[in-house]
Length: 331
Image 1 (cartoon, rainbow, N blue to C red):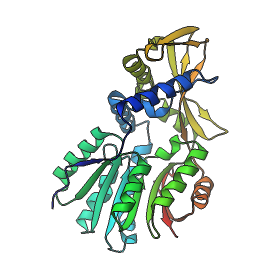
Image 2: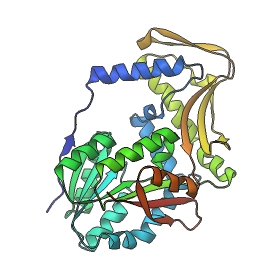
Image 3: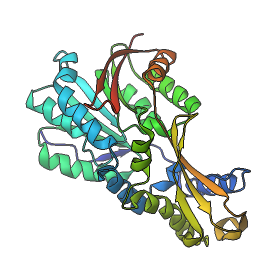
């Protein structure tokens, strides 16, 4: 059996609708009283490359912590599946460095499963297909080019096997609390009784460790944020001068989130051709770009309870910096 080399693309907005959404989002964000740009616009090709560099940087502890967890607990996770047929579904696998730990172990132990990769990025899906086809010729793989919830909705109609759903990397931390709760409730609605959900949460810790992770010594995170301005210049005909902004990433002790900003170093006006709009900045005015929430175990327990999941077990790294929390559906 060889890997399926096709990508199934679910219904996506056409180019006109997509461009209209981008323009509306940028206009609303930059004309708001508190300026902001959604973090989803970080990830053009260059932004994705920079993010992958961030995740490999020694200051950015999250990736290595989660890799440690998966390596140490892969057998325990496999045992929970009781040798039955199942779907291994990964939301936003990116380069696939985490999911492959479970895939390799499951294949070595002759578990009967199909791997579903759900990602909005065709580029990442193609990379995974090509790499996994080479490394795991016996893997049955289905790649879905879709947003997460539409992908799960589609899959629910296609397969009636038990599911192990992965949402790794603390991606949940980029959602605010209301969005997180709504997202988790929707996830629950697309799963069936007995299904498992393994979700990554970055835990609260020494603030200096957090500050180093989001202000790395080599300036990769800074470049990642500035790439957003370059993207607006290139795609929307804006004339942002990156030298007139600086990167600022503090920790909010009240919300428990790392926050990311670009700060205007002087009074200035930026023109965005695609909007036919001038955006005025006062001196030291910020553009908010991203939240990265850090969690207490009590908050994770509350998220699970409010979205009707049962926590089966929490898997920690050796430093207790990160947790992959295994939840189960009971209906």
